[in-house]
Image 1 (spheres, rainbow, N blue to C red):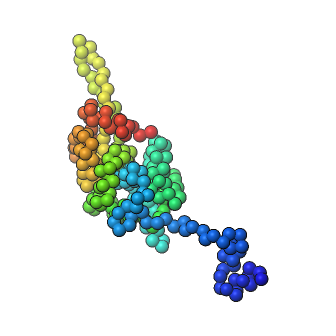
Image 2 (spheres, rainbow, N blue to C red):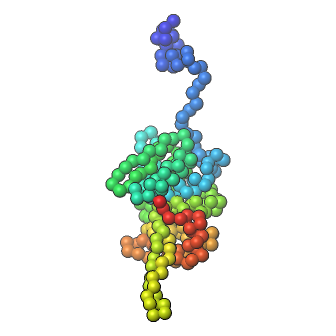
Length: 240
């Protein structure tokens, strides 16, 4: 019988009948399984990559709903730091390995984008409106990952809404003016909850910090003490 005759006799699509003549093994489903089940992350979830991606999401990420319950995760990365774009794409691919990762160019930045029905499961902080206008709190399982991989979370936060800069000052030594340079880290956000996630994690790893309020409700956290900057340099370093 022809493929069409078999299709009409059985009610099975002609495409499936033709495919079975060459491969009778069912193709594995390409639909990603939910990485969070019964309120716990699955053992296969890459926890260091997730901690880093969580920091990026809290800083410069958003989740938008599309058709049929599919959500798009978007992380905006400045084009001035191509290494950051690649690190973000690797983290997204590691956390959701069955889904494609795209790079969407815009004016001065690139959005790293991946679609899945399960991004809201991984980031329960998702909700309507800007993050600074709603409560942001880590779920217990997220906090455990943050406790296990605090430097990865801090690295994601600094790579999104932070920076490492070199300050300088001058002093008079033996009658002549000399210039001194010293590095420091900054993290700025308008969400007091996200600021608290950042500073609590700094406390957990022994980094000293100071916070000052800026215009439009933003809070600026600075790390300037030499020992703390050295710790940040060891685990984070400047964006590239």
